[in-house]
Image (cartoon, rainbow, N blue to C red; front, side, top):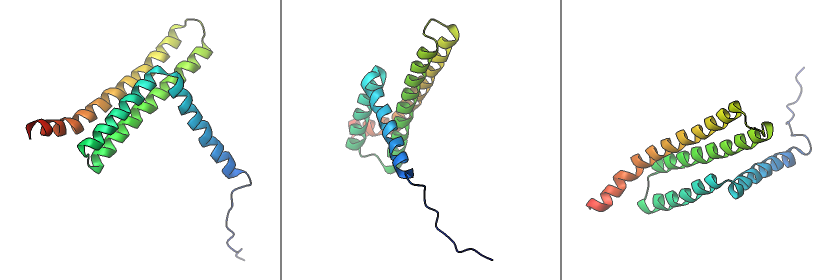
Length: 134
């Protein structure tokens, strides 16, 4: 015997918990922006890149590349900051292994930033060159 198809509803409080999760995530981003100098620098550079992108009239594909590169660098910097904070809590005294962990996290940010710079060169240099040769 077939049972009627009942719609599944989330349990009570499901959406409130989800909304709280987003709130915690935004609070984490805000905390990182307020307290992490390198993230502040990346955020400032992001504003400049977005203004240049708008001024130069990027295509949709170019916007996608630029936004992806920006997101990659910002996310890497937030991960790096979180790893550094956690490492400082776990190992308040000098520890060579903890230092290597922090160095690797910083290296990940450097890889993301170099990759973003390469994307920026590929997207922006031809457009800037066209401005000066037109």
